[in-house]
Image (cartoon, protein in one colour):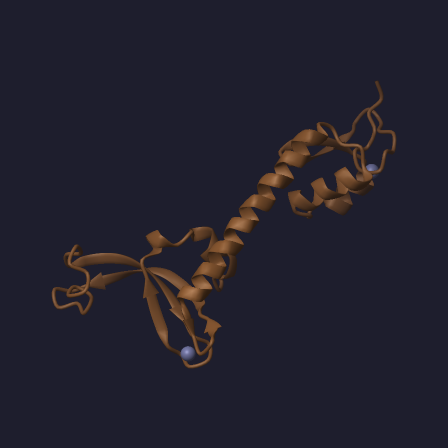
Length: 153
Ligand SMILES: [Zn+2]
Ligand SMILES: [Zn+2]
């Protein structure tokens, strides 16, 4: 059975190419490979479902739903963080998640009775408006939410 390109329907020769979309390998022609090889999987899936004839379309749909759900979760988390870590009427920018060395007289120890002198991981947020910096225990943050707009990360 001659395979055809999942994107454009073009008949494929003996040595056909394939591209992974939604974690499923789809047969593609050279042109579509060029066009889509740098595109994110979600975009490939969407185009396949809209215009193409993909292998296992249900699995692609499921993949997109998962992606969307994950995106929603990240957005919700970012909104929560934005409300929590806000200053000058705007959300603070996550700057980094770094380890802080706490000395015996570390100024955190009073407020953090469970932490003995040592290193502690903290997420750092900064207000772009006034330069104020806030810390947060990264355990309470979904790391994906920070990663999304972490500078240089
Ligand atoms: Zn094609
Ligand atoms: Zn501020």
